[in-house]
Image (cartoon, rainbow over all chains, first blue to last red; front, side, top):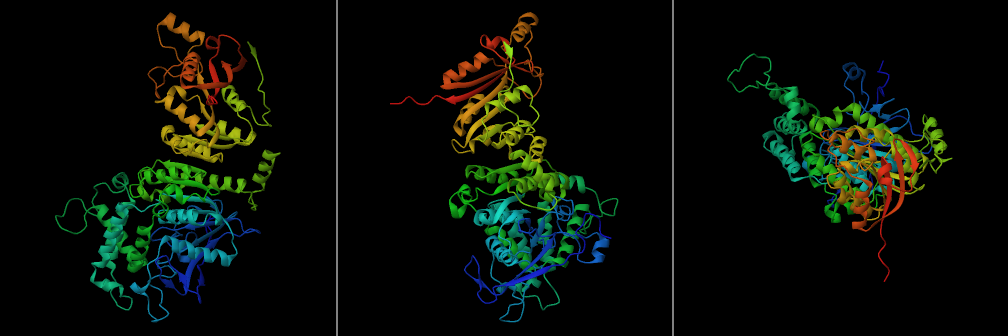
Length: 402
Length: 215
């Protein structure tokens, strides 16, 4: 039996489009056909207005909640944002229809370097065109059109998921009512690009990478991808959370061995995380998705960040950052809030006190649940969304206006 | 001086603390309101629900911002100086500063900024000119606590005592016109005609910039 607040066993769906007319990418390249992997939880209401679009981060997938198999369920291996998606949770699936798509360029079912190139019949590898956050979002629009969803109630996501949220709000404001960018930035900073590049260089330096052509070989660039992931994990933690989680403690030993095997707990943690990652992620996809993040800059094409949001004044924002997040520091979010305010956009902002670094957006469940559910409640009330289960609120709202 | 009732219906909502109710009574229904240092959102929530204003708030404390979001309010976490600077000119009808004035590092700047982003400013503050405060200093030689607040001189946040007369002088220097005034004495709204600075424990003023002389 699944836990009472789980969406239970779910499966991934695939939306295939651009079968005839190719999908135009921001780079000028074309892609045909395009596959978008997605999952949904909960039920669409009659007028299709209760949709919450959840956006995943760098290494995420469409599998945001529930389990794919009974054995995963037994092992408690739920989707990446299961803490917030399910019956009675922040994104309450008794009331909302939650939709999550895997991004273009990733390796979890959407078109990317691991997909088969229809021309050669082999995986694209580096022949896959480079994609942008804008391309990722425009592919999602094709899916929404196919599902007959004109306007989503809210788009939410952290990190790269937050960049997609901002892309939605800046370029497609007429399709969304609310936006929740979490622990993110409107412009990928030089430091972020630097960390991306270290990860990519680790992959390039692995001889098994073979310029991206390794899919029919026995050896994959696991060593390079593992190092890339280790660097990533360092940036997701904070000095304080590393002290709390690992300190200078040694792993399975009492004293120094004076050797080069991992001795400290932090070392074995990173090694474990790195190795684990190679079993679930593709090295080329890592290159494509990090590159898409590096290209992300909403202010440059408009002169100022505020100018990017002049058409977004009907979108209500909830911006969240975390005090110990040094990868996407609070001042990135504050800059965003300033720009939104200057553009006349309704924005709620909170910088949550947390020691968990960038990881906080998935860890601080209690605070996040309070914030997300209250904000959604307000959207439902102010936007007059008719949702099963909100009858009490509807009556209350009617009382206010009378 | 006589006790007076609030002049606006509360539409079935519980009345607020008298000084907050006084601020609320100065705000017309349906206007755009910015509440500076909005705390847990008690006043803003009331204005949004009972008076249908389009409300926004700025608040520094994380717990208070969370409380505001729970009430369904639109509130930004941050310092007032930073927060105010982001708003375009005349984005609001009324900008409220309730019981926060004595705690500001730069009250003059904030008051001027309030009248840049808003057409009108509504300010409430405890009055150290109250006769008991004066007597307290005279008889005990100790700095009096604010009549309606309980912070001692060494408590945080730091405060700066001011009186209704001080505030009136500031307004005169800055070319600000007091267009509305309400007074509270120990939690009761009162109508005071004379020697307000001696009798009121809390003052609530509505301010506007003097319109430039027509040429």
